[in-house]
Length: 171
Image 1 (cartoon, rainbow, N blue to C red):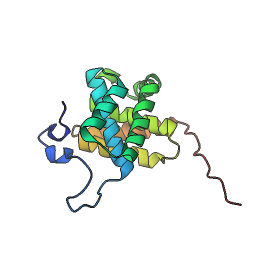
Image 2 (tube, one colour):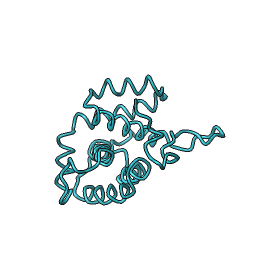
Image 3 (tube, rainbow, N blue to C red):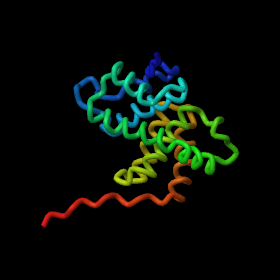
Image 4 (tube, rainbow, N blue to C red):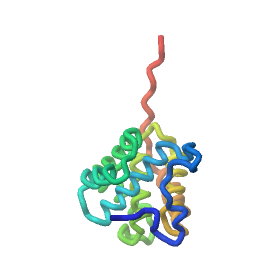
């Protein structure tokens, strides 16, 4: 079983998000859902296991709220369904880096963010990039945030994002 809070000597950066010991939530629900999705994607990559089984195992062990589960499951399912397309995008923008040479954490963050760029038009591009950079800083190596930022900035300039669905106007 992986212990996310003891991944490195910087373990305080890996403490589970949620509250600041005063009962106040310090991290947004979608941010926490992205952290969960990253952890599941990492586990799927490392174990070679089935994404649905890995998600269910995560729910049993960590019991996140249903609203966190919904967005996290959407990301994991979307990344798995579009993985070949997402990986092709990563490879085309990673100069001098084969996909296998990118760390599993950085690769998972890029997959998550590219899925959001491609399939979640309701999330602004800047938010996708900022959230991914923060995941890189929190879970990745020292240069992960910069690497993720550079890759996603280049990718986002070339992608054509679908327009967000418009809300029906009251009459």
